[in-house]
Image (cartoon, rainbow, N blue to C red):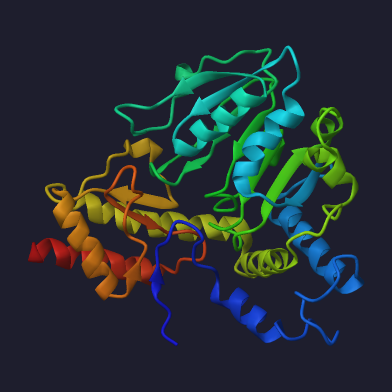
Length: 361
């Protein structure tokens, strides 16, 4: 088959090698006589896959034994609620830095659970053109935690340097850029990421949480929503999404074989530069709405002179074999999501198309 050039923001393209492995092993995992989908989550065959996935998360991100790695359900949206349910105790307040739609939603969930305040926001005319500077932050030194969204899929912005929050635990929703580059996990109290953009399929969320935060979590909420429950059971307290975890394992194994996160960062910066250079080369036609030092390496957003030209760009791009170029409905424009699994050749095709579309318009 001819695979389409896939710029979807999530669920997004996955490494072909990871999919081919799943294709080979779909009917039988190893020599077990059954598919991974059919194995009990309590059995040794699945347990090996489960533990390998967790081990690869630790290895690739350099996660120490001071942290638990949890494989959970409900997407990042469930973590919007679980973070304050576990970590925001009565009499405390949490700080939220608002840089886009998803951080606003996380803040909204925290307000339902307890007391939360906006420590900074970059919203301007219902859009988010930048990431705040350290000087913009009005942080509470007594906050239960500070929450950020590391990459904003809709706005096309990304934290290039994480904020200094002192001794307060820093919590990050990294759903759309986890493992795009190496990071120092020790700077965070908790990191969570829906897998479907950069490290796997939909249906599984990776949670990396410092053990002292797990232990200090509230015990007056239902057990299924407690981090302690999942940490104590190695994320097997109830039936996990076994096939998404299997595919997560496959994707992370490919990432490792391709040189790990240092190599991924080099590839990702190279791809992003190609697109941003193409935008800058034709400033009369293509325009980035994002300030230069806040631009995402994962989701490149830009505008054309009119909405009509943008619609034509998307339609012609689809005819040329490229899907997923339409910007989010809330902001319009064009968006190319160029996650880890997006090959450089796809980006080169997009850049050539941009050049030809400009000439023909």
